[in-house]
Length: 304
Image (cartoon, rainbow, N blue to C red):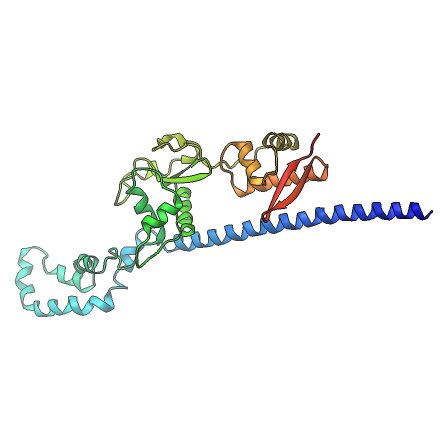
């Protein structure tokens, strides 16, 4: 009787240990997902803040007088006051007297002078991070990584790190102003084909074409791959398919690594989470095991 109790106790303890490991692994997995979501949220908030600084078309010209008026009103009005005796004969030459009135409101006349002295744009404000990154990318002859863009777009007065550059680049990709390509595990960015190096875009309809549906329109340069990030959020994903990929890879693999092997391209977070959910089902069916290596949750197929 005592022997049976010991065996039953050992079996219950083993079952409890297995359940404890499973719950611990799930907690680690949820913590990993939470970390990814928090990082993505911070990235999206930075991107939203960068985009929100761009005002609607037509408003910059209306807002222009507001900023420079306190500084340049005296500079503009004083020469006008000195030249008031000369404005009367100027009326004979077809509307020349109206130009001082426009200058009094702080419009085009002083803006060129200010731009050359201050180094800012015609609005008197510093360009947004997206504008800086976009301008740098359009000056390049080939694709660049986020780190290279951060280094090239940085200035002594405005340093740019890789995270900020990546957020701005993703904003350009979402607006079809840049293309994203992947070579191995490195992601490259380049401006959309046909866009000018500087200035405004002359043909807006070409920029708004669905580049994601036609990634081959932009020819790869310097050995880059035309494959873009894969986002198959609606594709069916079976347990057998994931298990086959896990066995094919062999050894311990992360959910993202398995997803990239399945789709042979970089994948987004929703796709990685779908693969992770399927892997969890495989673990529950005892077809795979889950463990933690270097603070990362990894999966490995059980020997059949």
